Length: 119
Image (cartoon, rainbow, N blue to C red; front, side, top):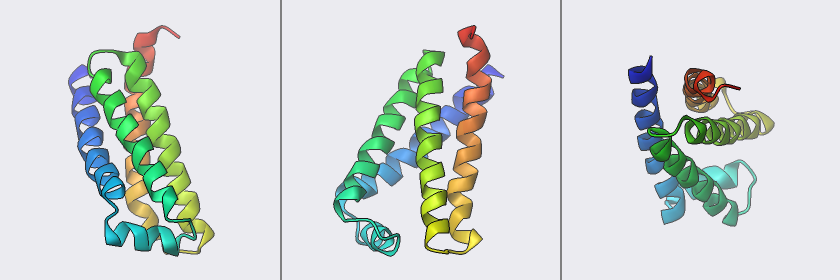
């Protein structure tokens, strides 16, 4: 199970490094999506910072289960926000699918790492 957790943490790290980087770089398609979701343009940068913090947490989480769980919770919350945002503007289920899949992956990391914490 430890190998699966490491693979998922790296996968989530790569996904969110790309997504957060695009947001912080101010990619045109990302800004258009946030406009469609009825968020101000500055919120793109907030989301990007949250995602990069999650990446750092996953990176540290490869050595510390506590960080993996905290990063998993942060990224899961981000994906719940994404799903709710798409639902609020009545987007198709297909537009919510990537966030839903990533939410599941973050939840799996939390479940795999949580027992190690002894909580």
